[in-house]
Length: 187
Image 1 (tube, one colour):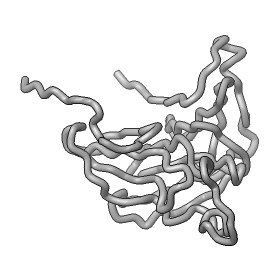
Image 2 (image 1 turned 90 degrees about the vertical axis):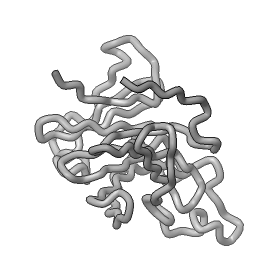
Image 3 (image 1 turned 180 degrees about the vertical axis):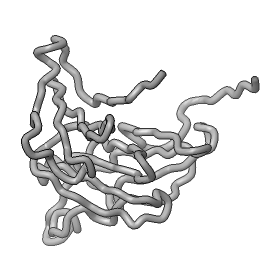
């Protein structure tokens, strides 16, 4: 087995809240971009050491003065936070909440490097989200202090009607956490 030593920082840049997946022989990483536009930078690597920028998920996720820095408005320190990146059945998913819009955003594409990305807006905050796909069901784990699990529709485009909208893990596990990452382990 070959060994490689990787020295930190791997990327000499501000790349907070990374979410990394592997599809085939490529690793993809996405990061919080907050108020910066274009947003949700997508990076690619073959070895987890050498990364290149390949695309952005959106130019601007809302069409208003604050997001376009017009009329003296802005969203400094707001915008997209703790983006989650997933790949499921041929589709790439990116999701995040926006504190300034008080909404949850889900973007989907079949081509992560070239798009186009389709956008879906779900009411309410889902702070520091993480998508989990399980036997035809989709869940988003989210929260700050109290971790919640919310079920989405099978296409991850809306809350699932009739589903348990919010189940708090704080009371069940007696933990306080944020920036949770849900991962399905097999075998």
